[in-house]
Image (tube, rainbow, N blue to C red; front, side, top):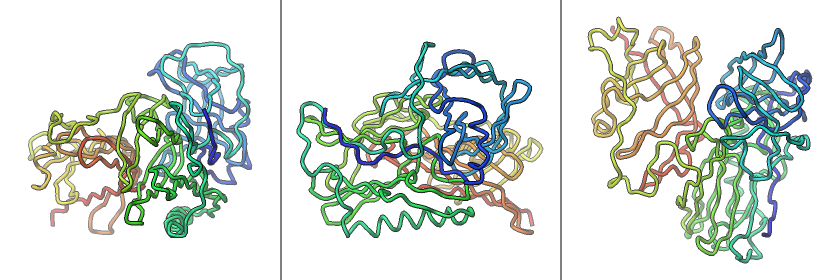
Length: 452
């Protein structure tokens, strides 16, 4: 097998230089790397990621990047933990550590070497003595974009790294501007690596397709909104027959580009385990290819897919029902902890105690897809901060989950507004397959009902 590394990118969230000055992660005395769960409570596939080396240390727990862990009286506590979207949370767990093992809330995690593009913390990981991997340096872990030749194919001479063509340079600059704006709004200073964009021909038309990722940007002085334990924001620019580019926004860990005899060029997109109905960083691969009009097509989900019907046109797929909540009668909603809000023409009800946002009266144009009582969001209301799971609906398909976060805003005498953002899934036009994201920060806006 011939392998050409196109970019060596680590899945590491840019953190603040101030946090790096006081390295509380290094103070734990743990070896950098993945600690895979081998027993105790919880679902198989859980993991802990230690990144004490480099200028931006963090401890990855429960999908959060924690920068100030402290151990006292048998507990690990961290007050500065961030999920994708930039929301700040806290963690407190019973803790013990010794050798290459960590114990959190009764679950054991063992330091486990991971080969490039290997299965990170597979389910049913067995306890075993393992050797410590080499420390992970910043931007020096598994490659994000690589090319391989399989099935005795022949790697074309132009399949490796290519220069970014002049026609694609405005696309690269636009993505840089987008990331820079968010970084500056958060109080940071953006810094891009020289190989921010990777160019390779994946649809065989002789023109470079462009792959960009937020992993190639530091946001010095502010917490990143675009990289974390769930992966990193990426943008693909795929060449079309008319000379333009189709843009696809993604959230992934890494991508392997393969030349095969059966499917031509295919891309194996490595995602967080939640995309394959797993908990933690279990292996989740989405195999796709790209045609010469820039369209992405699903070939397979080798590790299973969460709540999706793959390969079937929506019109012929079975009709699963969205998650629903049995609402109390309308005249009893207020007394049951529910308040009324409006969202994009639909009437919604929100219960902060249960953490749910539910359709009370879907607007006419979606009533055939979204029933009364369908859950649009479920998660946690922590004062004015909100985080959890939202759902995208398509007729004939299961709701597609994605992570969102946001806050309650005061409109100064005109009630409150809730704004949630996150990478909403984008479906294939002819099936229920998820082929990417509609935008890095899709917005859900809710306006409070006011009885004037």
